[in-house]
Length: 521
Image (cartoon, rainbow, N blue to C red):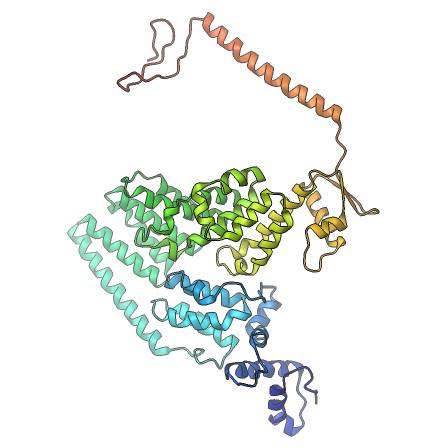
């Protein structure tokens, strides 16, 4: 029989009392592993006062659950370190649907918070209409801790909610048919909107999209069109369909609205555009979009009956998304001018001061401090439902830019010095060399590596070639200016004259003349 070495005393006690122990039958390592997980989770939930088990043991037990074991074997991301934020405070920033979605995402990725996230999400999901999301939460909790009090499906609630949903669908469709018979456009539009919102609450996104799209022919004002467009943008972000999200958000921003409505719709559509670009991996465009979001976004309230600052992303999220995208896509001067000196975006940065410090360090050429701040928050960002899939690429781009900027003033740098300046957990000069080779091959870094002396060497500059290149550029510019002057002389000799439009005192445009006493047209 296998000895119970390396497992807790509680598990050894349970195994000694098991039938296999009494019969003398041997147990496989896999059997012991499953028993260890079940007993440990039971012990952790029993609140025993012996002090033998703590939160670290809890995370370890959850990480050994069948769900995370399978996820690890499939190469999925597992965030084993607990984030800095308080889970309940974090969840309270979002509305019901977004809260449950974000908690479910955390539970799928983070063993230390999985149980707490599910225990917060399940009661919240039962106050909504989406029964499938509730069943997904129960299934995940059962695969992590089958003996949890919440790991059993409330069949009565599921059946009742499904019946209520069907009854509400029939009622709304019946009302809509009545509106269509009466041919009242505004009533039809509102009926389609109510039906789409009902489908959206049930997470039937395709049906919600069709219902909202049918509103278009019954919209009688630009505001109605803007509301419909933002609803479609919201569905595209939830789906997610990032290209469509960008397109619909830009359409909403291009509409002509009343002065009191325009700022509210523009701030929301600008934020949605930024999130769409982020989701599609276009970090440069995302940065410009987020930097242009008006600070009123945080207080604008519901727009198109959706409070985007709670249903999609908070003002804190905009600060993080915009700051990281800017760091990944802008140079130091652009960061200084467009981010740190941006009066509007400064309001967002005040909510996340560590992002502002990281950008300030980068602008001040203190790259190691910048990367250290970002690394401290990597776990938090990996658990973000929108930012998580992109955080490794964003960090890679920021680190690559930092290395390139660090190397600019030097003709050569030792690999050991670079390793110290840009540390990584378990980093070695060999790892740094591999990273530099990859950057050189992809054209990010213009340098050569001396593997014998372990040096990164800048390529020698040919002053003669640089001088020739400068002369040729100057000659091309002079030639261009001369050709423009010759063109003007030829036009004057032909009796032709083009004048730029001017405004008279009455505000009317003066027609352009094509010669003395002649006008075009």
